View 1: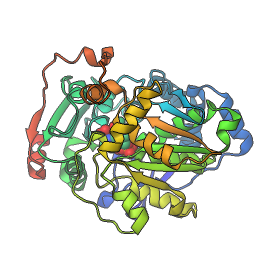
View 2: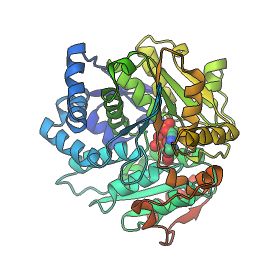
View 3: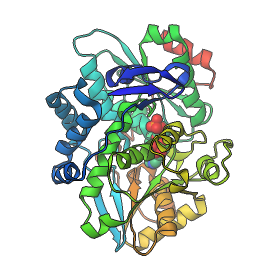
View 4: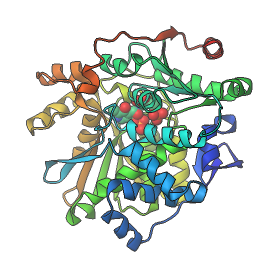
Length: 430
Ligand SMILES: Cc1ncc(COP(=O)(O)O)c(C=O)c1O
Ligand SMILES: N[C@@H](CCOP(=O)(O)O)C(=O)O
């Protein structure tokens, strides 16, 4: 597989190099040079396979012969076997694809766990120290911390906006210790993400600490996420497959990039809806053609509180390469008030959800036509937002073991201001 840097198309790399580099020169994201198209016959064969076998096959088709099939299969098996997606019918024409049955109760487990397997493979028999610097608005941090926990020669540093993630999200990754260091930043997620990008521009630092990132900057994260769109499709009836609309709760736009890549490979998805909370840079851009991010606003769906979505250049590139019009992409933003109403609406139908999925559900209901079938993605377990969900729905939620075993542990985080020189000092000292 060859990839190029979106900021400098002359910079080309292999998949392994792109995974090791994370980000290209001038903070440019890597993007696949070839976009294979799967024939109808191959697609039918793939859809007959189980999740692990199909995902290994798909990733092998995309990545090529850089990683042998048996090795890739073993990586996918280790990464995905504890995170199987579940399809839950809500109404006759709407279902939720739950992607939160992994160890950290969010869809981020797919990408983070696959990336950890690839890094482990690439670093095997080498004694290089790697520093995985990652920014999180709540869920990526936990998935990355657990995926790389106690991995030899890897240290993980996670930055998150202080006071802007849920208490339980924080407990899930800031209580681990060992090779996991967490830093709360006095600022927004966007500032955390900018610190990560700045670190990549510092060549001395990069070399000294063996810098990498497990944000969706890293292409391995997104390739892994393509796989669950195929799984979703395989779980539908023939009628449901016909006019399939998928609504995705969007923050950094990694999830939707993976979905659009799945579509570009030949998965017959009719429409995607990019659903955001009040951090609506993309819906406004699609409406007006103007790029004008506002300051990041705190909302109920905190993991989507992102005003400069990192993956947007990849979405734009894909549309350009496929000669698709951006008009094809539906979008919208949902206020906290409507998020609450949607959560209650789901509760009345017997389904307990959480604010991120509720944003996607709201726009799906609004935009779905009579002859269409709609899926919204359940990206996190409701218990990660226990206080919020309990208050809105007037219920008591019990905690899954993954969370309950961490609630009493102390938070081990450091705290700094979003100033790069401070982070640099920390990274060199620690
Ligand atoms: C629960 C949840 N839903 C949705 C999102 C948004 O996903 P993406 O950043 O891939 O757009 C996130 C964070 O990324 C999240 O943690
Ligand atoms: N919402 C994410 C933000 C990080 O984005 P990613 O695309 O790099 O995973 C989170 O939960 O941390």
